[in-house]
Amino acid sequence: MSNATTLTAEKKGIWGGGRSPFSVSYGKLMMWVFLLSDAFTFSSLLVAYGFIRYSFHGNTVTPWPSPDHVFNHFPFLHGMHLPLMFVSLMTFILIFSSVTMVLAVEAGHRMAKKEVANYMLLTILGGIGFLSCQAWEWTQFITGTHEGKELFNGIIMHGANLHSNEYGPTAFGDLFFIVTGFHGFHVFSGVMINITIYLNVVAGTYEKRGHYEMVEKVGLYWHFVDLVWVFVFTFYYLI
Amino acid sequence: MEHTEHLEHTEPPKDMKAQIWKTFWILLGFTIVDIGLYFILPSNMGKNILFIFLGVVKAYFIVGVFMHMKFERKWLPYLIVTPMVLVIYLITLMIIEGGYTSFVR
Image (cartoon, rainbow over the protein chains, first blue to last red):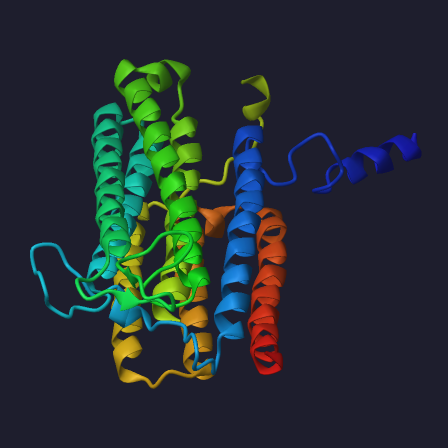
């Protein structure tokens, strides 16, 4: 008899079984685990960036370019030297779409269907805005400057491709394409998922289900994309 | 859906909306500080470490408030944050190692 009582007492511990030690639903916990694994993928890219970037430290033959001489363009302001301004605008758009996302989650807790739908729509627009900015940035990077740079074989190189670029080492262009491209692909997937959830919200799927947990789950994904951009911005444009 | 019912849900605080906007202004402020420091400070390793530190501070606010981590039971933050601390250590090590590679070249 006393044995049985100690057993039930033990079961009340966090890891005693019979309940979730994390106190979140299965779906949300799995979203966190997925985000952790995705964070590892991005970390591997940033590790590669940090290593290659600093293996060019002090290299005077093929120096690593300074970001404020590469990313200094702004739409409609042709020929002006405006370093980092456009990428700051992109950062601002993504942070703001993160805010509208979390406001949608907050409205979901209050079961305010119309508000959730409106905030989701704003988030989608923010995501599309960010992607458009990135498309412009890539176009600038690939097209390059008017002067270009003469390569060792006498060909004048404008802009960048995967084999060479006018800014610096080949690895600079390649890392730009893979890091911002992989992040941009995440933003694109996020926009697609957000559109799906938005349509479900409008159709009243979650109203019928009785909770807006799906909005919270895609919210986690969307904030993660924002979080990764914070580090891509730090590593690629500031360091 | 049955099993979700006896989860003791960690409720968000009452003033969640105010907290969201506060976090937005903090993030915006840190981004502006980032850009300001980029032009003011000379380029060296200390500046890079400062930028990574500011990135981690921004990450704290995004994960804590936007992703609700601050209001979850403590085991979830432990589960997610512990591997990422080790990853940041790895990034630091590889930047240093990259410097040696440049020296050997």
